[in-house]
Length: 298
Image 1 (tube, one colour):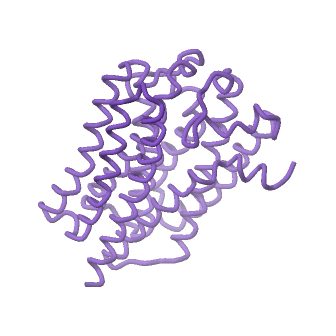
Image 2: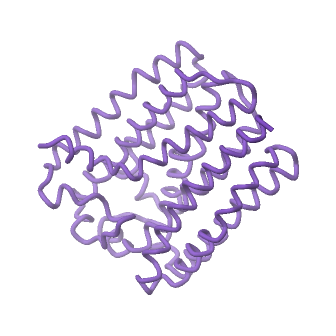
């Protein structure tokens, strides 16, 4: 199989999220006077490997459960489609995911010895999310899957990277990492809307399935609003620099995403909303990071 096929299996457009998460963390650390390019690049590599593992193991699990054959595939949801199209076998995708995870392990071990064993609980939680997210966590219900995604690919990477770079705990950094968790939770949340029927058949207990899409759209809207309120409150309490308010420039895209969620029955409204949601997730965090950089420079 070609390298291109394996590359596409990683769902590279989603891996941009990992780059943005590390950018935000590095910006926060630099704002606090600490910058280590080597550690920053190493954490980025580790997160990209873990993100790749999550994406590929998710594809494998969706194929084995039959979800891939019932999903409504969009540019933003429904998996890569590479296994169902015959591009790669399920076995190869599984091992691709496992090898990606195993390649990240030495990076974690390096940081445990170089920074401290206080990082171990963080790494263990991250490993659980990577290895058991699709196969077990998504079947627990009660919003656990969405919260786990927000933690595993949002709050924990941002705060964890900050801790690695600075070798210390910071309440302001923890506060500033919360919007990332909510945003990534929303990324998964809205992407679940087109796949409710497929997820039901595969045993997944997603919030749109448990709440119904109408109630889920309201919860999504509240979470979206919470992100912006959190940033404003953070600035108002002087926990976050005032320049992070530039993240509010994504409000028009957020409104478009909320409007599409509310109009979920119309796919011509929902699919553009999925794209707007992705833009909000990536650009809001990028602008937050930029805000920290501006606050340090100006």
